[in-house]
Length: 377
Image (cartoon, rainbow, N blue to C red; front, side, top):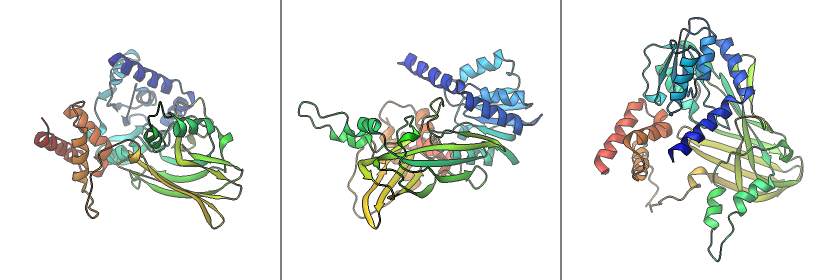
């Protein structure tokens, strides 16, 4: 299956390179922010394009960090375009990288379809502490999350109504799990049931937090059926340079986030829809709550989470104990030791999910190794 993985990786990065708005806005921001002689760090460099833009802007040295195998193509591109002398690649998670000197500028294009969902803020928090000089500049500088309730008959039918039961076999659990996941379609504003609303705005400075909990209410403007919440982002890359994915944005390499409701809800103009979305574990777990009110009457209220989006072993607990952070990590590692991941892959996954919550990433790595040593074989 390696060739399929390689092809998928190439296709994904080709879509990023082909996204003209993404490429042009980031290049514009980099040329505005990076100054001649700067040391730059690029987290999630991919093919290295943003690192090469930093070189064009005058950076003396660029540390390009990329966990995936695409880094081999990045090295080839750097050599071909004569940037190899200024760009140094690190093939690892940024949590585990130690740079030879602090940087003046941080660039990261780890924006997810809903802005903060690829662990971007967690990487940024760690990078500010370990990689950057005081007063260092960051691209992007801020991100906003926007939402709108949406009717999408075709999309929801794919999630809620399929697959149908087959030959007397009840397949309803599949449908249940489908509507408890965040999906990534391209949506059109024609299905919006209200005006869009700003859910959250975050400066990506020292105050930025890896997770968030935000609520907004909107008033329904047209009758229809509520199938879920559409989400997108608007990022301020630099002063005067903005990159957004507001629907339809069909040419964007980013799709939209779709948070389905448990069951479709008929809505009328004047109804109020309260939307609350929060994350945990550096954006790896999502929870969305949707309340529909008509006057004083609650028409529907749903509380959904991506942790219920796939079947898992569920033990029976007495009382209401809560695990410590170490307990969460150990529990996750024990489930993940299914013979399909080596120790390095387990470490990578734990750093991605929990790394920002440890004072030092090495603490998470140590815990993984101790768990494997004690309970693995």
